[in-house]
Image (tube, rainbow, N blue to C red; front, top):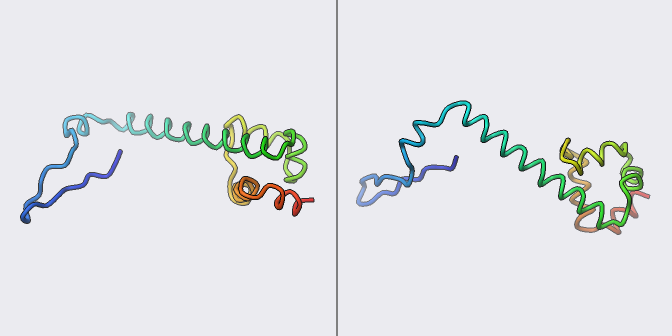
Length: 108
């Protein structure tokens, strides 16, 4: 759900662009379903990103995992969207995306 913005004209509120009936009809189950869909979409985006970064390096999953110092199952899970890279791994993927040669050199 987005933010509802109310415009003021001459100090008087003007109705926003929402369908109040639809909002009122939204259940907790609907909210949970939408949140799960958003999470699944984020996992898929992260999986595609991890795969793209690895492929840019020209390394296999096994070689990429070895260079990063993580189990190959970790890389496989990232690329399948089963797990999301977090913390240092996420930062390292960003560095590998922007400067793969420098990052791989530093990891050697």
